[in-house]
Image (cartoon, rainbow, N blue to C red):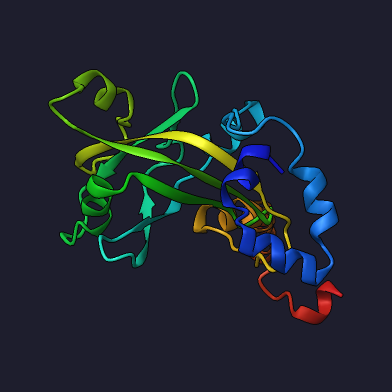
Length: 214
């Protein structure tokens, strides 16, 4: 577990509950180390982030209500920038603008990036900055995919403060249509070959019955 993630999110109330549950000693060892230094994203995190085509982002309204929204795009639409920052284009969707309005008052966010087939998830906390399209056209261009036709409305840049990898418990594997197609492709090919062979055999032996092939 990354140190700054737990330094930031483990409140006294959380520590008290860990004490009652008997897990405090283990988590106390995890908390050892320098406080206040951001958890730096490495190659493992960069590869994981670059493979994602969606994630969940949590923000807080002015009244203190938590709000979670799903964001998506082509695989790799979330980019790792220089330093310890990630960025993504906010593509045009519904017109509620709850997340965007929340971040204008409170920039702190929490992200869940899911890998359902492999039962992995990466949790990120950070501070978000909203960048309008005209403010940094070069950044906007770097976040776009030529094969993806959705229109961006703005860009989010998130300074990563901490992150944590979760265990696979209770993550149900889910697969996309493309992933399923890749798995069954050899079976589909084999079935097509068998059908072709049967058709060829019947064309040469028109009186062939199923029993003849046993």
